[in-house]
Amino acid sequence: MKEDKLFPTTRNEERNRLLFSDNKREQRNKDSVSLYWKILIIDDEQDIHTVTSLVLKDYIYQKKGLQIFNASSATAAKKILEKEKDIAVIFLDVVMETPHSGLDLVKYIREDLENA
Image 1 (cartoon, rainbow, N blue to C red):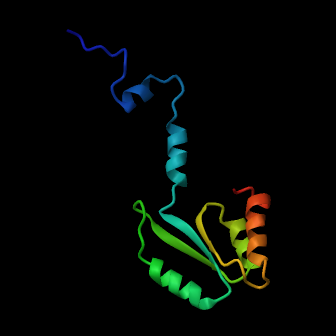
Image 2: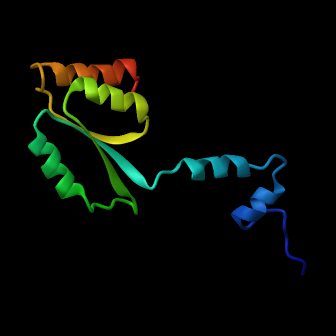
Image 3: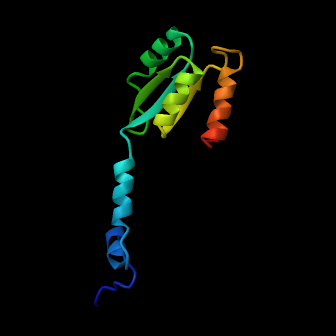
């Protein structure tokens, strides 16, 4: 009996049957995947940066290491956030140069960068 190929059994067979292949989209997704999770630490105390970086130095999550960015003020953090669009986690001290600078930064992230 001849094997029925009406329904593809593998992803490759399915892709070969497509009129328009999605290979370019898959390659673009592979190219955009980073080897690191980007972490931003925002605090006006240098000790916090040192200890956090030391503790997380060799941390691996889902086969990716961490790339840590440090900012000691809300202004410095904004510059990093404008440049680095795919930061996974932000550790934020809400009281820095002013009592509300950290909260202002959260507002900036949510409203101006539209990142809820």
